[in-house]
Amino acid sequence: MAEFAMILADTNSGWDHMDGWGGGWMWLWGVSMMVLFTILIVWMFRSAYRPPVPPTRDPTDRAKQILAERYASGDLSTEEYRERVAELQ
Image (cartoon, rainbow, N blue to C red; front, side, top):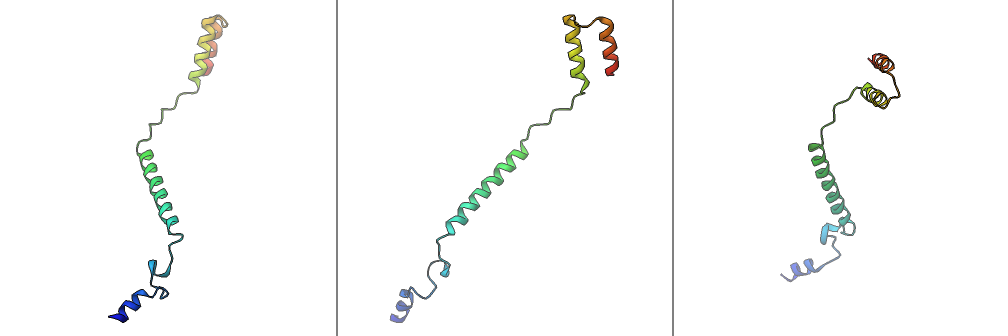
């Protein structure tokens, strides 16, 4: 029994904490795994709850709106307005 106690008390055998790997930098592994899991969870939620993409609009809609505003303010005559709207279509 005394021999067994001496074997357990021997700290230079290489079979101490972490089987001789040491534990000095092991905290870095734990922190990096927590960060990676957090990034994964955030990515999953953001990809699942992404807002819908608005439908694409016709680029001539804005041009027609500007023409209507100019016609309403009196910058364009009726003939000019109709001619320019017809060109857009």
